[in-house]
Length: 224
Length: 371
Image (cartoon, rainbow over all chains, first blue to last red):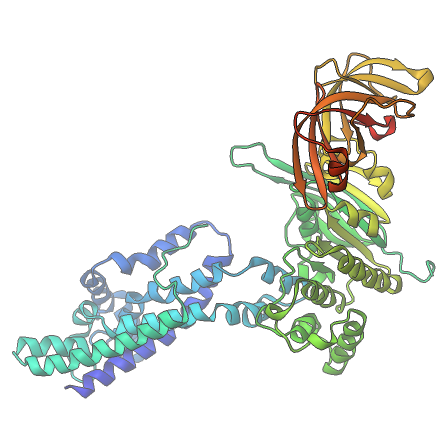
């Protein structure tokens, strides 16, 4: 079994899950509580990776991150090295790939909150920030946990996007799913099975945690 | 005592329009002043009571108008001023109470005191906890409290902030009468010392009598009447108010003739031959009016009664008898259809049964002309 690939996948998934959540919390706040035009467009963009083939997402990510792509150029000028086929590139692509899983559970849990609690907080003099940390977050934490775990698990299992933008560099971009694919290609079925079984177990445990905490995991955008 | 009280006056003059999604739009259009002390906001559900409180609290924004506490402007549509709820320094107890379920009772009560020193927070909480009898609940979560305890905690959480206005949206709904009276007593005692405008929404008639120094009736987004509770609610002048104020019988009537010498006029009910006398009012003979009569104000007799002062004695038949807890609702058809409330004992002793011939006895002054 390829421990290196497995550890790389865990590191990638954890990084993406945490970064996504930092991004998803304010976005979910805006989607759940604020009224603005064009909200549906943002919702559509966030949900796109659910329906888009990973290869399509990967292709566009690759084009953007290529040395002459907009993101690639920016990265090169900021850090002095190319973005494509690096761990950072993988993080960026995975970020978009797992976006809906990080945002939707949080929005759902925010929208399920009793609005009168937020009103009460405001009337009692609490700022929006204090309301967020003292009322919204403590009451919506099952949704936030769901989002963290789902985006972690979803990134762990990604294949198409990694294949497109990561290539297959051991220790840098060869994740566990790529490793399994490689082994099958080279007829190493025993090695592939070992890794696959471990991945299966990890994903099962992770999802059990989520479902144990919160039943409404696969809710689509809630009705308004 | 009155001299020591602050003389804060809340003035509201607002309009807010809600598009009705195809139905007729709802327009809240209120002009009113609230002095310190209790003002009961009374009216049928959907009259705009909660919306009015939300506008005063800054949770909803009126389309136009002005909200002021003395000289301080909370909202001014023309000058585009709208203070945030945080800066209005008022307290609002919602119908749902909205206690924070993940915080203990003490944390709930201290929630609005975050800007004060901890020692001062404790001092204030202790003061109020004594007055509202919740000292033994402080470490519990709202989910572990009874309905009455929750309501006390919600009131304490509101009052501990020393608000300049207190908005109460049916805060005591669902409590039995004795518990409600006890909490009302606590509230009244608190306000004797504080003297701020208190707006108290209810559509419970008993609460109006118990708490109201002043009552303002709302219907369909507009102020209908304003005054002392007895005057306003015992002679409701609109159909919605009559129904909300507990007049079970609101009948269509046509004025037949005026009898100024007797101080009455005769009206025919629901296009039938059934006629009754009601107090002389501003309605010309021939005009269509409505008459409101409480179901509890009608007497039943199994034989034609004589020698009564009551002017209206109507023969009819019992259509249905329905027991509703401590009272029995009897529907009687006389030409018009009346709902009569009697006690279960009366049904037994008079041996009332559907189909039976019966006489209705109604005092003239139990009949109220409504718009």
